[in-house]
Image 1 (cartoon, rainbow, N blue to C red):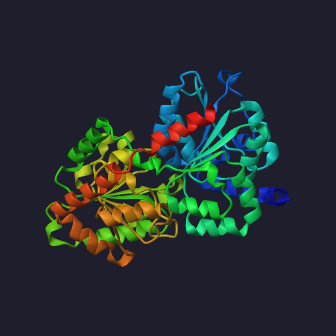
Image 2 (image 1 turned 90 degrees about the vertical axis):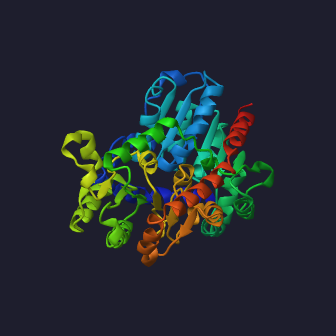
Image 3 (image 1 turned 45 degrees about the vertical axis):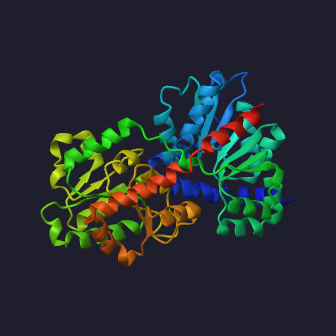
Length: 436
């Protein structure tokens, strides 16, 4: 009954969901494309015919990037098995296409996840007939889990986490939550604390394993480090570089104010620092560019470097706006300090392990609930510092003027990553168990 009521409410809300999609498409046209996929309507690829696929669901960019090493390991272990990857956002979709460009249409099939209603999901499952669904993190939908259970598709949730805030939300819908969690075949949770929260809202203990976070298993390739060195040479190898990563509306102003404070430091006059701003969502690129220019700062856009590199002077620029997707890591590799976005608005913060793996120390605002335990580990080790908005400028001054301090904090951050690897292998073994 609880799921029936949920489905009824979802159905009634569907027109409003579609209106919101239309509104988002005005700023980000990609949201206006491939609508039929969201209703479970698409052409089934020939290479899936007669084979048991593994289906990975990664809601957007962050989850997909974290899942790539795991997907690659699964593909290498079973060369004949088709891989289906779903996302819900166009930015996530672009990353799938970019990373698995050569495998798309041959072994990898990408499609949007249908809306969480039985008739859409049943159509999806009938077409693809996957043997196993691997959900990254906690993108849990009642009808998705139930439809897979009914169809005979096993469900494994990898890298699962449940914040205290989310647990309270699950508890308010106790019957629906318990029904959904009871139909998950295996839940690989990041830590004991989150595991206890899952059990409290209905997850069977026997179906749950603590594996740690696969986000610690970050592979840093030599090409990435070389790319970072190349960028530094282009804008001046001795310049201090501050990355502001994955910003949301309202955070760019905070970062720019802190940067302007930094520019008032007399020692910065001879070798001015460079600020790299990476907005989280592409529909904000132009707005952020306008904001930077209104501040009177010398701006270079990444898109201009791609189209007309000869017309840009990186060495005299003050701000580089990365108005492209999937390039954050190469710019992190060229940075001295990372200010992590999503933490100066109530968004819970974004993944601090990416800069940590590159030995880049991190400054974050107080909103960290998405990565609470990871942030705590990094802060206790010294590689991350929580800084209030009004203190950000002064803290940047302190860090930027002390090379030894930056180096030490970067090493401390990297040590946390190195000491927590291994979750990917544990999740891979759980996948093999579910398949066999």
